[in-house]
Image (cartoon, rainbow, N blue to C red; front, top):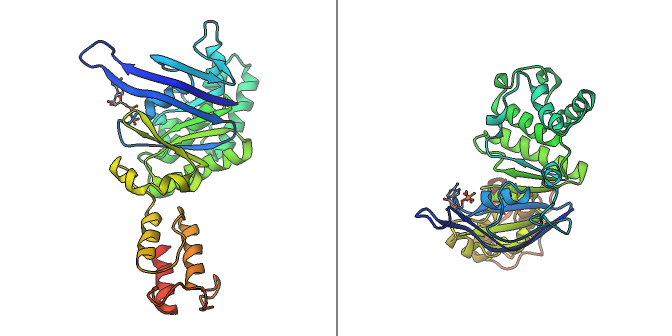
Length: 314
Ligand code: ADP
């Protein structure tokens, strides 16, 4: 599986007063099996971009290749593309409409022409993958909590067994626990099935934690397309684009400026914690000062202060 975009442009309402050049000369390649994060300020083109991946909207010009085939060629099998690239919209639970969860999850496979038995087997598999408890299978989608509804909606897409799962802000509006649960589940799916995951998110922390690669959109253009550490190294430029790096990036830079010899490319809390422990010359277990590796005398002081720093970071 691979997706390749060549000089892709998209213009909303061309030749009208509402014309909007939403995507500008996008060139990208997404190889199979990657976990790709897409970030950018509101209106930067993220949603427009991902709707191209399953052919939901057609580029004004440029090419999009799926597995090496140009999807805009006449005769291209769009139905197959839509089966292989599953798109989970923002607030997907708004599209739950069947009488119970099981029927809702069966909807996609039914549309694919599968038999009732196959639909049920696919639905059971998908519901298991998203971790929704069995007691909810016969419940009305409207009886579920926000997080459960979202799991059910994601299961509806997974039941079609996509090779690529595209999620547009899947955690929007959920509480922190619901947010972590959903993302952990998506990461589990990625590990378990090897499917490509393309995740649009506002949260730099989430993206830093899960993505192998980040695409940064800015005013309809790709600003960066690189590994998280390489992208977040541009944190000043990201700020200018209305974005921020993960909080730990700022903490690490701050510590470095204050004289602690930390490597500043940590992007997750646990990486930062390990790096600070290393720089302070402490043992990870037991918080005893091992001494020796601290850069200079200006580093945040003694053992007690070191522990405090760790707590604050955690
Ligand atoms: P994002 O997902 O990053 O918030 P979008 O892809 O939704 O960005 O929007 C990109 C640009 O296209 C924005 O300027 C937005 O106002 C415009 N846009 C989005 N949808 C439409 C539409 N249906 N008609 C006209 N303009 C649109």
